Image 1: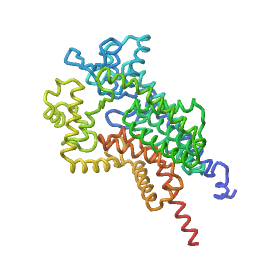
Image 2 (image 1 turned 135 degrees about the vertical axis):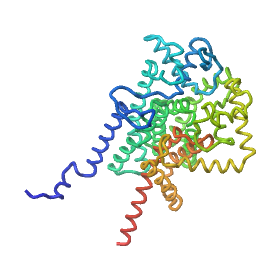
Image 3 (image 1 turned 30 degrees about the vertical axis):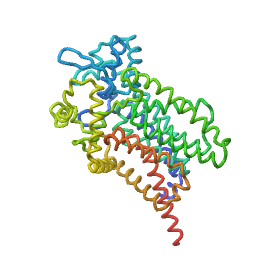
Image 4 (image 1 turned 90 degrees about the vertical axis):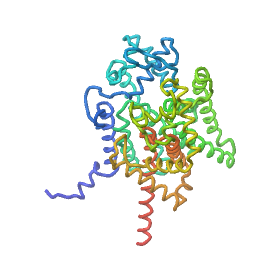
Length: 478
């Protein structure tokens, strides 16, 4: 029996298309397995597997849950503070209201099946409360919703690539596989029950829909309009960090349909404007609850409740990235904050917030040169090739960042790349919006995360363009 490599390569399962399909199926299996059984070891930040559910919720959830508990029991929107053996309460402002509302609804349902005490909700300093029944079920629910939404987002990711000029099915399959296995969404953020994962998938679905609208491939029914609008609005309410990227992307979308309306008339863009009206209605309606609560509790229609993060990004000790020591008693940052804000621990959360905002604004005004240098430093930190809190070079992230820079370089020297495919500006401006947020506050891996799928898309386009250009030059020489 003769051995022939050429015959083997001609077998159906060894052509590139079938191999790419097999790779994509394998990636789906890995993603589901890691989502169901993988978890990050809190001590080592390494991925481990267990058939029991070992995912721990973020420490912020106890504060959100305690606010919901206090609302249910008539104490108002107050935070619970553990002081030795007693509990104290202060008016709270530093949490997204929708997140408190989710815990409010969840507690209402949960207490029908099992009793829950404030101490169980608020927990203790050690964080052992995260393994009790309340948080255990909560983590499972968030994890399940995250997995389902991510899997739903895969065909939207493929559609996004198609509408941006990637037509080869094998390349689409390979790209979707890398989207499924990208380290941040598979391990570092993806393995933690965080709302970031929900917003991550929602942004891919939302921007894919916007580009479909611009290319004329999207559905025109009101149900789809409302679904996408609600998804994007709830993402902003869950994680206000993406307010700027979402509104910036919607503004770019609006400019595109304005240009088309001027060229082709209102009839050709009628459904696009219907979607814009639906989005504005949904966004303003859902946000009205936040505005009402702001006015009721804080006497302000628009209340900036993250002045703590604003100050940590713009004051004498700001280092450009998240400083985890500011909340640790005895640390230099912890003591410095109490030196520049007299009676800090006696102030309410609102008073602390206002004082922090004032300090940051004054520092920017009085240190323009330092602020400019700090902004450049934040940009540099944003593009460091690492995931999560580990300062270890991550090869996939390095490749994606290099690919993104390649895309920018090609766009500058070969302007037709964007001119021939202008809708690529939507993911590009979304990335720019994420960068703006990191400069406005500080660089944080949980905010950088939202840019990952779109930098992956631009990297794929840049590599495809480069390969086609090199092949074209070679054919020209021949």
